[in-house]
Amino acid sequence: KQATYAAMRDVEPFTRDGTRIEVMMNAGLRDDIPMLSLTGADGIGLFRTEFQFLVSAALPQRDRQTRLYRDVLDAAGDKPVIFRTVDIGGDKSLPYLRSESSREDENPAMGWRALRLALEREGLLKVQARSLIEAAAGRCLNVMFPMVSEPWEFEAARAVFESQVAFLRQCRKTLPEAIRYGVMLEVPSLAEMLDVLVPRVSFISVGTNDLTQFLFAADRANPKLAERYDWVSPAILRFLRRVVAGTIGHPVQLGVCGEMGGRRLEALALLGVGIKRLSITPAAVGPIKELVRKVDMNEIGEAMTGWLANPPPDMRHALQKWAEEREI
Ligand code: PEP
Ligand code: MG
Image 1 (tube, rainbow, N blue to C red):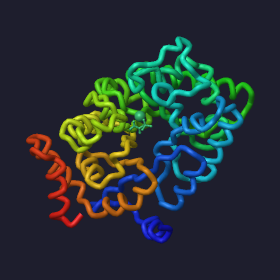
Image 2 (cartoon, protein in one colour; image 1 turned 120 degrees about the horizontal axis):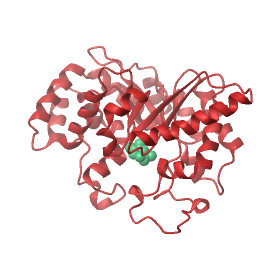
Image 3 (cartoon, rainbow, N blue to C red; image 1 turned 45 degrees about the horizontal axis):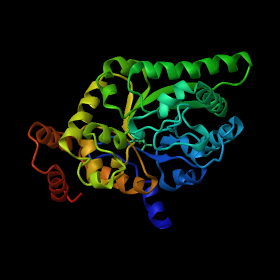
Protein backbone atom coordinates (compact mmCIF):
# COMPACT_ATOMS: atom_id res chain seq x y z
CA LYS A 1 0.00 0.00 0.00
CA GLN A 2 2.86 2.34 0.90
CA ALA A 3 4.41 1.63 -2.51
CA THR A 4 1.13 2.50 -4.27
CA TYR A 5 0.98 5.82 -2.45
CA ALA A 6 4.62 6.54 -3.27
CA ALA A 7 4.06 5.89 -6.97
CA MET A 8 1.22 8.41 -7.17
CA ARG A 9 2.50 10.95 -4.69
CA ASP A 10 4.48 13.02 -7.17
CA VAL A 11 2.01 12.77 -10.05
CA GLU A 12 1.05 16.32 -11.02
CA PRO A 13 -2.65 16.52 -11.80
CA PHE A 14 -2.63 18.32 -15.16
CA THR A 15 -5.38 17.45 -17.61
CA ARG A 16 -4.31 16.43 -21.12
CA ASP A 17 -4.98 19.96 -22.32
CA GLY A 18 -2.89 21.47 -19.55
CA THR A 19 -5.35 22.56 -16.84
CA ARG A 20 -3.89 22.14 -13.38
CA ILE A 21 -6.54 20.58 -11.16
CA GLU A 22 -6.03 21.05 -7.44
CA VAL A 23 -6.44 17.76 -5.64
CA MET A 24 -6.64 18.39 -1.92
CA MET A 25 -7.63 16.07 0.90
CA ASN A 26 -10.21 16.05 3.68
CA ALA A 27 -9.05 15.56 7.25
CA GLY A 28 -10.20 16.06 10.80
CA LEU A 29 -7.86 14.44 13.28
CA ARG A 30 -4.20 14.67 14.13
CA ASP A 31 -3.79 11.11 12.81
CA ASP A 32 -4.84 12.23 9.32
CA ILE A 33 -1.96 14.67 8.97
CA PRO A 34 0.73 12.24 7.71
CA MET A 35 -1.55 11.47 4.75
CA LEU A 36 -0.77 14.89 3.34
CA SER A 37 2.83 14.06 2.50
CA LEU A 38 2.03 10.42 1.81
CA THR A 39 -0.53 11.24 -0.88
CA GLY A 40 1.07 14.40 -2.25
CA ALA A 41 -2.26 16.22 -1.94
CA ASP A 42 -2.20 19.95 -2.71
CA GLY A 43 -3.36 20.81 0.79
CA ILE A 44 -6.23 20.16 3.16
CA GLY A 45 -9.34 21.49 1.48
CA LEU A 46 -11.58 20.60 4.40
CA PHE A 47 -10.40 20.20 7.96
CA ARG A 48 -13.45 19.13 9.97
CA THR A 49 -12.71 20.75 13.33
CA GLU A 50 -15.73 19.15 14.97
CA PHE A 51 -13.92 15.79 15.09
CA GLN A 52 -11.90 17.02 18.07
CA PHE A 53 -15.18 17.96 19.76
CA LEU A 54 -16.77 14.63 18.93
CA VAL A 55 -13.96 12.56 20.44
CA SER A 56 -13.72 14.70 23.60
CA ALA A 57 -15.67 14.08 26.78
CA ALA A 58 -15.97 17.81 27.40
CA LEU A 59 -15.79 20.95 25.29
CA PRO A 60 -12.14 21.17 24.11
CA GLN A 61 -10.45 24.06 25.88
CA ARG A 62 -8.79 26.84 23.94
CA ASP A 63 -5.23 25.59 24.47
CA ARG A 64 -6.13 22.12 23.17
CA GLN A 65 -7.79 23.59 20.10
CA THR A 66 -4.83 25.88 19.46
CA ARG A 67 -2.38 23.02 19.78
CA LEU A 68 -4.23 20.87 17.26
CA TYR A 69 -4.56 23.69 14.71
CA ARG A 70 -0.90 24.63 15.12
CA ASP A 71 0.22 21.02 14.63
CA VAL A 72 -1.84 20.78 11.46
CA LEU A 73 -0.36 24.01 10.09
CA ASP A 74 3.17 22.93 11.05
CA ALA A 75 2.75 19.63 9.25
CA ALA A 76 1.20 21.24 6.19
CA GLY A 77 4.12 23.65 5.72
CA ASP A 78 3.52 25.69 2.58
CA LYS A 79 0.38 23.78 1.62
CA PRO A 80 -2.93 25.49 2.38
CA VAL A 81 -5.26 24.18 5.08
CA ILE A 82 -8.91 25.19 5.13
CA PHE A 83 -10.28 24.96 8.64
CA ARG A 84 -14.01 24.55 8.81
CA THR A 85 -15.55 25.89 11.99
CA VAL A 86 -17.49 23.34 14.00
CA ASP A 87 -20.33 21.49 12.32
CA ILE A 88 -21.95 20.07 15.43
CA GLY A 89 -25.52 19.83 16.55
CA GLY A 90 -28.21 18.00 14.64
CA ASP A 91 -27.11 14.39 14.25
CA LYS A 92 -23.61 15.20 15.56
CA SER A 93 -25.03 16.16 18.92
CA LEU A 94 -22.73 16.39 21.92
CA PRO A 95 -23.79 15.35 25.41
CA TYR A 96 -22.10 18.46 26.85
CA LEU A 97 -23.80 20.77 24.39
CA ARG A 98 -27.49 19.97 24.52
CA SER A 99 -29.83 22.57 23.20
CA GLU A 100 -31.31 24.67 26.00
CA SER A 101 -34.79 23.74 24.92
CA SER A 102 -33.94 20.04 25.47
CA ARG A 103 -36.20 19.46 22.50
CA GLU A 104 -34.45 17.21 20.01
CA ASP A 105 -34.51 18.21 16.37
CA GLU A 106 -36.98 16.17 14.40
CA ASN A 107 -34.95 16.73 11.24
CA PRO A 108 -31.42 16.96 12.63
CA ALA A 109 -29.74 17.57 9.26
CA MET A 110 -31.96 20.60 8.79
CA GLY A 111 -31.84 21.51 12.43
CA TRP A 112 -29.93 23.62 14.89
CA ARG A 113 -26.44 22.72 13.73
CA ALA A 114 -23.17 24.07 12.41
CA LEU A 115 -23.07 27.85 11.97
CA ARG A 116 -26.66 28.22 13.15
CA LEU A 117 -25.62 26.84 16.52
CA ALA A 118 -22.24 28.59 16.51
CA LEU A 119 -23.76 32.02 15.90
CA GLU A 120 -26.04 31.58 18.89
CA ARG A 121 -23.40 29.98 21.08
CA GLU A 122 -21.12 32.88 20.35
CA GLY A 123 -18.75 31.93 23.18
CA LEU A 124 -17.99 28.70 21.40
CA LEU A 125 -17.26 30.43 18.09
CA LYS A 126 -15.16 33.10 19.80
CA VAL A 127 -12.96 30.49 21.46
CA GLN A 128 -12.53 28.68 18.19
CA ALA A 129 -11.76 31.92 16.35
CA ARG A 130 -9.14 32.89 18.89
CA SER A 131 -7.58 29.40 18.78
CA LEU A 132 -7.34 29.47 15.01
CA ILE A 133 -5.98 33.01 14.86
CA GLU A 134 -3.34 32.31 17.49
CA ALA A 135 -2.38 29.00 15.89
CA ALA A 136 -1.83 30.75 12.55
CA ALA A 137 0.35 33.56 13.94
CA GLY A 138 2.65 34.76 11.19
CA ARG A 139 1.09 32.60 8.47
CA CYS A 140 -2.02 32.40 6.34
CA LEU A 141 -5.30 31.29 7.92
CA ASN A 142 -8.14 29.94 5.80
CA VAL A 143 -11.47 29.78 7.62
CA MET A 144 -14.62 28.22 6.22
CA PHE A 145 -18.12 28.35 7.64
CA PRO A 146 -20.51 25.37 7.30
CA MET A 147 -24.23 25.38 6.53
CA VAL A 148 -24.40 29.00 5.46
CA SER A 149 -27.89 29.55 4.04
CA GLU A 150 -27.77 33.31 3.47
CA PRO A 151 -24.92 35.80 3.03
CA TRP A 152 -25.65 37.59 6.33
CA GLU A 153 -24.68 34.45 8.24
CA PHE A 154 -21.29 34.59 6.61
CA GLU A 155 -20.93 38.26 7.55
CA ALA A 156 -21.94 37.58 11.15
CA ALA A 157 -19.43 34.74 11.49
CA ARG A 158 -16.66 36.81 9.93
CA ALA A 159 -17.43 39.62 12.36
CA VAL A 160 -16.81 37.24 15.28
CA PHE A 161 -13.37 36.46 13.84
CA GLU A 162 -12.61 40.12 13.13
CA SER A 163 -13.47 41.12 16.69
CA GLN A 164 -11.01 38.49 17.95
CA VAL A 165 -8.38 39.89 15.58
CA ALA A 166 -8.99 43.37 17.00
CA PHE A 167 -8.72 42.04 20.54
CA LEU A 168 -5.48 40.15 19.88
CA ARG A 169 -4.02 43.17 18.11
CA GLN A 170 -4.69 45.21 21.25
CA CYS A 171 -2.90 42.52 23.25
CA ARG A 172 0.05 42.93 20.85
CA LYS A 173 -0.10 39.29 19.81
CA THR A 174 1.37 38.18 16.49
CA LEU A 175 -1.50 37.91 14.04
CA PRO A 176 -1.81 35.75 10.95
CA GLU A 177 -0.15 37.16 7.85
CA ALA A 178 -3.55 37.01 6.17
CA ILE A 179 -6.98 35.62 6.93
CA ARG A 180 -9.04 34.33 4.06
CA TYR A 181 -12.71 33.61 4.65
CA GLY A 182 -14.91 31.23 2.72
CA VAL A 183 -18.09 29.22 2.93
CA MET A 184 -19.39 25.77 2.33
CA LEU A 185 -22.11 25.78 -0.27
CA GLU A 186 -24.33 22.96 0.90
CA VAL A 187 -27.69 24.65 1.40
CA PRO A 188 -29.35 25.33 -1.97
CA SER A 189 -30.67 28.75 -0.93
CA LEU A 190 -27.14 30.11 -0.85
CA ALA A 191 -26.69 29.35 -4.54
CA GLU A 192 -29.54 31.76 -5.28
CA MET A 193 -27.51 34.51 -3.61
CA LEU A 194 -24.19 33.85 -5.34
CA ASP A 195 -23.97 37.32 -6.89
CA VAL A 196 -24.17 38.83 -3.40
CA LEU A 197 -21.87 36.27 -1.82
CA VAL A 198 -19.09 35.93 -4.38
CA PRO A 199 -17.52 39.41 -4.00
CA ARG A 200 -17.32 38.89 -0.22
CA VAL A 201 -15.57 35.53 0.02
CA SER A 202 -12.14 34.22 -0.96
CA PHE A 203 -13.32 30.70 -1.62
CA ILE A 204 -16.41 28.53 -1.86
CA SER A 205 -16.41 24.80 -1.28
CA VAL A 206 -19.42 22.84 -2.40
CA GLY A 207 -20.41 20.19 0.14
CA THR A 208 -22.16 17.75 -2.11
CA ASN A 209 -22.98 15.34 0.73
CA ASP A 210 -25.39 17.77 2.29
CA LEU A 211 -26.26 19.59 -0.91
CA THR A 212 -27.55 16.36 -2.46
CA GLN A 213 -29.74 15.52 0.49
CA PHE A 214 -31.24 19.00 0.43
CA LEU A 215 -31.71 19.12 -3.34
CA PHE A 216 -33.46 15.77 -3.41
CA ALA A 217 -35.06 16.05 0.03
CA ALA A 218 -33.42 12.70 0.76
CA ASP A 219 -31.80 11.97 4.12
CA ARG A 220 -28.13 11.15 3.48
CA ALA A 221 -28.12 8.76 6.45
CA ASN A 222 -31.06 6.66 5.28
CA PRO A 223 -29.79 3.49 3.56
CA LYS A 224 -33.13 3.09 1.77
CA LEU A 225 -32.36 6.26 -0.16
CA ALA A 226 -28.65 5.73 -0.69
CA GLU A 227 -29.00 4.10 -4.10
CA ARG A 228 -31.89 6.22 -5.21
CA TYR A 229 -30.27 9.55 -6.02
CA ASP A 230 -27.20 9.49 -8.15
CA TRP A 231 -24.43 12.01 -7.63
CA VAL A 232 -24.04 12.24 -11.39
CA SER A 233 -27.70 12.95 -11.99
CA PRO A 234 -28.37 15.86 -14.35
CA ALA A 235 -30.17 17.75 -11.56
CA ILE A 236 -26.99 17.96 -9.48
CA LEU A 237 -24.72 18.59 -12.44
CA ARG A 238 -26.91 21.37 -13.80
CA PHE A 239 -26.94 22.92 -10.35
CA LEU A 240 -23.16 22.75 -10.08
CA ARG A 241 -22.68 24.16 -13.55
CA ARG A 242 -24.77 27.18 -12.63
CA VAL A 243 -22.61 27.68 -9.56
CA VAL A 244 -19.46 27.51 -11.70
CA ALA A 245 -20.99 30.06 -14.10
CA GLY A 246 -21.84 32.32 -11.16
CA THR A 247 -18.19 32.55 -10.13
CA ILE A 248 -16.65 33.20 -13.54
CA GLY A 249 -14.91 36.55 -13.71
CA HIS A 250 -14.38 36.70 -9.94
CA PRO A 251 -11.16 35.82 -8.11
CA VAL A 252 -13.06 33.45 -5.80
CA GLN A 253 -11.71 29.88 -5.66
CA LEU A 254 -14.40 27.29 -6.19
CA GLY A 255 -14.05 23.65 -5.23
CA VAL A 256 -16.00 20.57 -4.20
CA CYS A 257 -15.27 18.84 -0.89
CA GLY A 258 -18.07 16.26 -0.77
CA GLU A 259 -17.33 12.56 -1.07
CA MET A 260 -18.41 12.43 -4.72
CA GLY A 261 -15.13 14.05 -5.79
CA GLY A 262 -13.21 10.97 -4.72
CA ARG A 263 -15.08 8.65 -7.07
CA ARG A 264 -14.02 8.07 -10.67
CA LEU A 265 -17.09 8.91 -12.74
CA GLU A 266 -18.21 11.57 -10.29
CA ALA A 267 -14.83 13.32 -10.52
CA LEU A 268 -15.03 13.13 -14.29
CA ALA A 269 -18.47 14.73 -14.20
CA LEU A 270 -17.16 17.48 -11.91
CA LEU A 271 -14.38 18.27 -14.39
CA GLY A 272 -17.10 18.32 -17.03
CA VAL A 273 -19.03 21.07 -15.29
CA GLY A 274 -15.83 23.08 -14.86
CA ILE A 275 -14.72 22.29 -11.28
CA LYS A 276 -10.95 22.62 -10.96
CA ARG A 277 -10.46 22.01 -7.26
CA LEU A 278 -11.39 18.87 -5.37
CA SER A 279 -10.94 17.97 -1.73
CA ILE A 280 -11.40 14.27 -1.20
CA THR A 281 -10.72 11.37 1.09
CA PRO A 282 -6.94 10.75 1.28
CA ALA A 283 -7.08 7.26 -0.24
CA ALA A 284 -8.66 8.71 -3.38
CA VAL A 285 -6.02 11.42 -3.98
CA GLY A 286 -3.62 9.23 -6.00
CA PRO A 287 -6.28 7.55 -8.19
CA ILE A 288 -8.00 10.87 -8.91
CA LYS A 289 -4.70 12.56 -9.84
CA GLU A 290 -4.12 9.75 -12.32
CA LEU A 291 -7.62 10.11 -13.72
CA VAL A 292 -7.15 13.86 -14.20
CA ARG A 293 -4.10 13.21 -16.40
CA LYS A 294 -6.16 11.14 -18.83
CA VAL A 295 -8.93 13.70 -19.29
CA ASP A 296 -9.18 16.51 -21.82
CA MET A 297 -10.99 19.27 -19.94
CA ASN A 298 -12.36 20.83 -23.09
CA GLU A 299 -13.63 17.55 -24.45
CA ILE A 300 -15.44 16.50 -21.26
CA GLY A 301 -16.81 20.04 -20.98
CA GLU A 302 -18.33 19.81 -24.45
CA ALA A 303 -19.73 16.35 -23.82
CA MET A 304 -21.26 17.60 -20.56
CA THR A 305 -22.86 20.58 -22.30
CA GLY A 306 -24.57 18.16 -24.66
CA TRP A 307 -25.71 15.82 -21.90
CA LEU A 308 -27.07 18.59 -19.74
CA ALA A 309 -28.94 20.20 -22.63
CA ASN A 310 -30.45 16.87 -23.51
CA PRO A 311 -30.11 14.49 -20.56
CA PRO A 312 -29.51 10.86 -21.47
CA PRO A 313 -31.78 8.33 -19.76
CA ASP A 314 -28.85 7.08 -17.71
CA MET A 315 -26.19 9.69 -17.07
CA ARG A 316 -23.88 7.26 -15.27
CA HIS A 317 -23.96 4.93 -18.22
CA ALA A 318 -23.20 7.79 -20.62
CA LEU A 319 -20.20 8.87 -18.55
CA GLN A 320 -18.97 5.29 -18.23
CA LYS A 321 -19.18 4.76 -21.97
CA TRP A 322 -17.41 8.05 -22.66
CA ALA A 323 -14.62 7.07 -20.26
CA GLU A 324 -14.26 3.57 -21.70
CA GLU A 325 -14.00 4.87 -25.25
CA ARG A 326 -11.04 6.96 -24.14
CA GLU A 327 -9.51 4.25 -21.96
CA ILE A 328 -9.95 6.40 -18.87
C1 PEP B 1 -20.67 17.93 2.77
O1 PEP B 1 -21.75 18.17 3.30
O2 PEP B 1 -20.55 17.61 1.57
C2 PEP B 1 -19.41 18.00 3.54
C3 PEP B 1 -18.25 17.89 2.95
O3 PEP B 1 -19.50 18.18 4.88
P1 PEP B 1 -19.91 17.02 5.90
O4 PEP B 1 -19.81 15.72 5.14
O5 PEP B 1 -18.93 17.11 7.02
O6 PEP B 1 -21.29 17.39 6.27
MG1 MG C 1 -21.90 19.11 5.19
